[in-house]
Amino acid sequence: MKASDVRNQIRLDIEGVQPLDNLEEAHQKDALTWIDSGAELYRLEEPATPPKHLIAYFAVIDNQHLLLVDHIKAEMWLPTGGHVDVDVDEHPIMTVTREAKEELGLAAVFLYTHPVFLSVSKTVGKTPGHIDVSLWYVLAGDRQQALETDDSEFNSVRWFRRDQLPLRRTDPHLHRFGQKLAHLSIW
Image 1 (tube, rainbow, N blue to C red):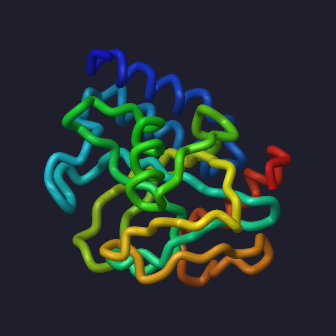
Image 2: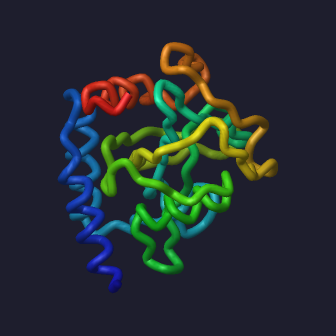
């Protein structure tokens, strides 16, 4: 797929997210303005060039449980995911498929083939801050399945019950993502 086609598809995916609240609506408008500006969408150099770039999160869910990773660099419990790859003009759904295999040893089983949530936020942790435009996807999981985790990226990997998420040390939008999943009757 040509770069312009991928960019257009990403724009359509972002435009298709039904905002949960005013904040997600503001993030959606910001992301669409960013895409329409012609700015680079992909991270070209670690950690922050350009200072705003595209991320694909994927929440692995099994019934009332969510898989989170204690991310070494971010110093937070996060859904798994990663930076969308510039080298292949990667669509975020390809990022999810690639990262699920690399980070967890899982074949991606999508509950939705489009992002269900969108956030724009400044990163924190051990690397210089930058802005992540994060598309959140949802995958079906199985708590009984053995995982092949990437110990170079994670201190730990753990399933959390919906009512026991580590909200004091996680992405600032995780609680809203949980609300979105409940709103969509996924969780």
